[in-house]
Structures are given as structure tokens and as C-alpha cells.
Length: 336
Image (cartoon, rainbow, N blue to C red):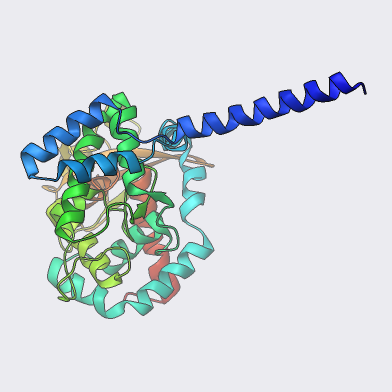
């Protein structure tokens, strides 16, 4: 190879490498020059009496992450059929993990059921689905996730700006360094993956130690999940969902018509969806279907099924939580 070619190749490689460095810097720049971030700082100073200097420093420290923007734009779970989605969460490892978590935290789970009326299997399954019982609480700094989405994701900027506001309020209240906490790409935190607003409204100091800790304290995490469910309408002792087999003349237009129950058990029965479970005709209900490998499966979703969807607005998510809880009970040999 000629000397000129060697120099050209070296120079080209150097420029390419420099381009990658500059690109990486651009992807992880701070938000201090962002117009929306500046307006946010103005708001937080005026509304909540934050220090302008401290917030401006924090906006420089908070990094814009392209990986977060890519993650939130990935196709939603609805692209998967139920039988594939189910296989993600209803696994031997997650069932075993649920048994271990239940056994280790039996006292706190019992106390949560006594206080809030939410059964252990639902609390355990939520934590299992969300973080594999604390094994994966997320690797993004929460400040990076929320600021990236608040200031660089127009479609949901309003939502994430409000979550960033709540995050800064909770870290100030709890005397936590806002750059220290990690969570999901959307800014969800702790064992139960609470967004900052959920933390502020529903997280509880369940063990009475004077601190609300959903990151390292399983008692607080358990009590907080139970409180979230009660505040979103959980009815103690009522079933979650019951399987149904449509009659030949069933009104199929009501299948998957709404997450929120629009009918009663009596009404869906009259429309051709019978149930043999211990339910009353007055209970709120709807009908939904799930795609199994053997075909479509039909369920009557009740009030508590809807309550699970308040945690994540998805029928498949709610069914994964419900079924994982039932499998954990079987593996333990019962609830006691």
C-alpha cells in the first residue's frame, strides 16, 4: 500500500472515530440549553421554591439518551399474541421466584392482606412481573429517563414533565440525591416500578421506620403495591376473572369493547356469555378474548381485573399477573 493511501486510511479512520465521539456526545448532552427545560426550571422555582442554580446544574447533569427514546418507541405488547406474551411471564423461574419471595416476606404479605384486603398472590405477582422480585429494577438514571422524555418526546411530553416535577419533589422530601436513583427507561422505580407520581400518592411506610423506601425495603414495597390497588378500586374477596364459552347466539360485539366494565354479570350472561363461578349478577363485568395456540379463549373480566389494568393498561398484563399468582399458589401448595 502506498504511503498516501496509508495516511488517507488513517485520517479517514480518525475522522470516523471523532464522528462517533461527537455523535455520542450529542446523544448524551445535558438539557441546560433546551427551551422546555429552561421553562421547567422557571416553573419549579416559582411554583415550588427550588433553587434556580441547583436546578440549572441538574439540567446540565441530566443527559439526553437516544436509547431511551428508541425504547419508548418500540412496538407495544399488543403486537404479540397472548400465548407469546404469557410465555414471558409464566415461567418456572418466575414461579419459583414467587414462592421464594412469598416465603421470605410472608409476615409482611399477611399484614398487607389484613390491612388492605389484597391477597398475597396478587402483590407477589405484580412484583414478579415488574422486576422479577427486585432482580431487575432498571439501569437508567431516573433523572435521565424523565428529562429525556419530558423534553425530547413531544407525544408524551406533558405526562413526563409532570412526572419529572413529582420526581424532584419526592427526592427533595425524602432527602435523596436526584441523580442517584435508577429505574426503567420510562422512569419507573423500585420493586413495584412506581412512577414518581404513584410514589407520592400511593407509596407507604409500611414498616413504620419513618421512611418510604420502595427500592430496598420489601415491606414498604409490599404495602405500597397493596395500597395502590385499594386506591384504584380493589374489592376484597371478589374474584378477578372467570372463563366463559360463548353461546351460538352470543353478541360478539361486546368482546374487548372496553377495559372498564361496561356491563354487569347478568347483562353479559343475557348476551350469551354464561358463567358458573361464584359471582352475583350485579357485579360489574366485561368480556375479553385472548389468543391461545388452540384458538380464541373468552373471559369475563370483573372489577378486580379492571383494577389490575390500572397498574398497566393492558388485558394481557392483567391476565399475566392473575395467572402467575395462581401458579405461585399451586407451587406453594396453597396460600397459607
